[in-house]
Length: 408
Image (cartoon, rainbow, N blue to C red):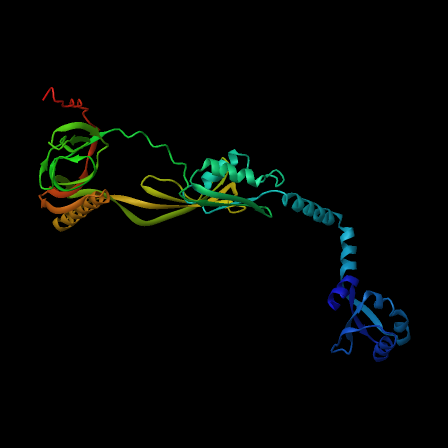
């Protein structure tokens, strides 16, 4: 508190020398003048601090003691204001800065979106911009309830949305759930399940319809595997009526899948050399400036761009970047027999992995890899187990006539 008061009132650091210095300080104490930070120098002079009010009371004491007073430094608010009055441009700039901050504080400069997974942040920001909500808009014209309602309407998979302002920040919290607008179920048409491939049925799980084939039996492309036509029979095992359903089943067959691949022993590859050039670029709107790197044939270019942002999602039309260019040279390479077989085996493994990603099981691998003087050839077949079943229209049969005592 003493330091604050000292700053507000102003203080002077002085050098006192010559005359009766001891009497000078005794008179100061007798008249209630406060002396701060009193220090004696090597030349028997003294350095101390007086407040501005007490400094103006030192005249009579100085004349009585014949002491000389030299002002070393002036500090405090009164001297700061005195200097500032002479610098009108400084005060004008300070005032304009305050007005600018006041004006900017009434606008939204950061739009933060959290909780979104199914819809990306740039997508939601683009939608908000189309609705008139963007960076730099006035906070007074912001309707958080309307923003939340429009997002819920545009993205039905959101369970709820909240929008609130925190200073110059608009925070939108999205919670996604399973509360989607369920589409009306389309009318289910009766159908059969037919085979799309030829093979041996290994498993069939029927949920609706009548299976026409059993595990272990062979089927051909186009055969009806599960019929959507149900025969209703009486006690005499006579068909009295036909009912039609949408056939539904899981049908797995085992079949052979042919495989053939060629891999040349001699090929051309790009080998990276230890030669590199770097540069940079600057983008301001449509203006593009580049330096340091010259694009050449046979060089690969790697560009790293760093966009400038004021806030999290407020991107400026200015970006800088780094350009790295590496020199490559094309060379002919000849694989050895071992290298060729290893490469061919890796290609086969990648092919099998893609099949398994589609839900296909591989029960046997009958592929052989042979190498001649120019090519590595992989040929053979894979025994696979896959799910089949194609929906086809069911044939509508004429309903049987009712039997009476007259027609036997």
